[in-house]
Length: 450
Image 1 (cartoon, rainbow, N blue to C red):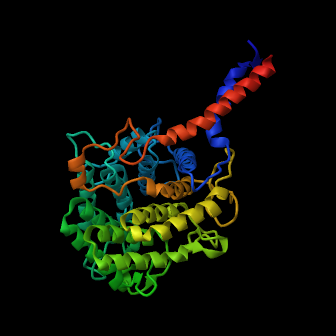
Image 2: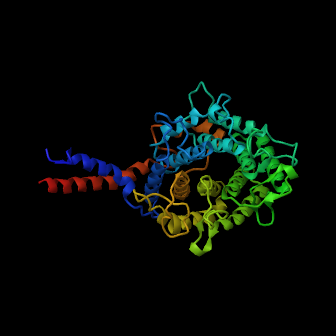
Image 3: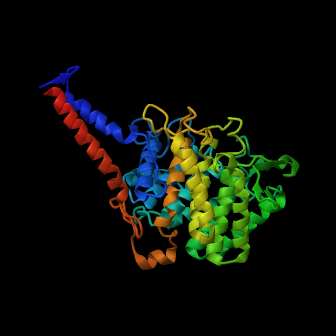
């Protein structure tokens, strides 16, 4: 048998063909769902490059250092949505195993190995993932354990139980435990998490108690000054040491994104002009995160221009894209504007950025530079994945409600990528070009050995 360095030549062909799906530069046609799904598939694989939780020495559900536990919850939410938007169930088993491994002893996503460092915002991002599992009718946990809805409600009531009226007239603190730095700080993202969970549970369950909590959280954010009601900018937070009178005025996209989606959920549920106007106003305020000089590319305004985005911040655009997509579905009059933001960002930013690394499809932090910026990481891959897959929002139904699910039966499973509007075309779109290239390589190799 002909060999190369002592190995059969076909061994190298197999290695090369296995790498092809990741190594070929991505040409994203924003008007072609198959092209979008192909790109999303590559970026989803890139997310899992940073995961070793199912390997010896890893913790199930956690990503490698330096990615904190909260970002793992965010990543599983991204991959769960990947299935729903593309119909590709490749990662569903990994997702469900990760989500169920982190429920904690009280089923509220406070696992013992995180309970000394976990903050309110950390818990919220896992809550977002399991809430999406309920809304997408993702395969439920075993019947003798709490289901996605019950787990979501446990997260919400765990957070709501820490509403603190002893300072600043209410609100959630950043940290849960007083020995952690930040316990004396009330940050917007923790309260945004409570607001979004309340809004989603209100629509999903039909329980008006959740609407009351959403209104309470909104009123506190606006009343304390963390929301600028003229421009609809959301600021970072405030310290309780001065009764929240000195506002930290950094703007992070994920704060605005959570309030945008929460308002859209409440509009969709209540059909109230109040929440319609708030949704519109927040969408207007989001213009600060899109750069006109590059054709409207999304960017993190507080850190990208000065190249100071830390590991957490590098993922924030993922949540802006995710929650804009949900908003466009729940409040259809926002669709054209949001879809334009996504298209411009992918066409003028993401497609050029995700050309780095040894594989040629690694994504960078900033999409403003016209190419790869020589950075890489979980947050960068998540941001690209979320932005691209949300181009498929016109291919899927709105998040389900409990009443709809009770009347319609199962929609998806671990084995099938099908849901009521999306087929498993993601797998097929990826398989066709790969198969052709493998055949071509085999033919060339046959000519060489002959």
